[in-house]
Image (cartoon, rainbow, N blue to C red):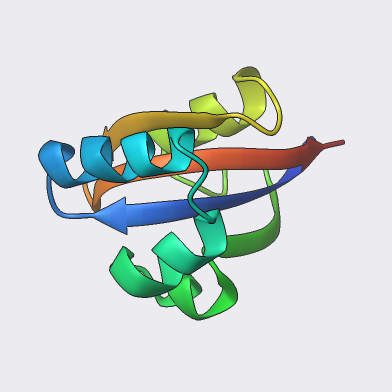
Length: 92
């Protein structure tokens, strides 16, 4: 089963996600933005979700993590939880 490690920032709307993505593009620290703005409990770990298997996350999230480029902020991605900015750290 493929596995990956990723971190994310979860917010309530696309506009907020776009603003945060712009800040990241301008050099903002992902972990600090996650700690300050994310709605997910993972924010205490800078948005890190640790390692998980393909299929553990909702499909839209999984697709980005297992098909997108590594070490590149992807999104905003909409799921039933809200809007995510996702960075895949590694896949195995």
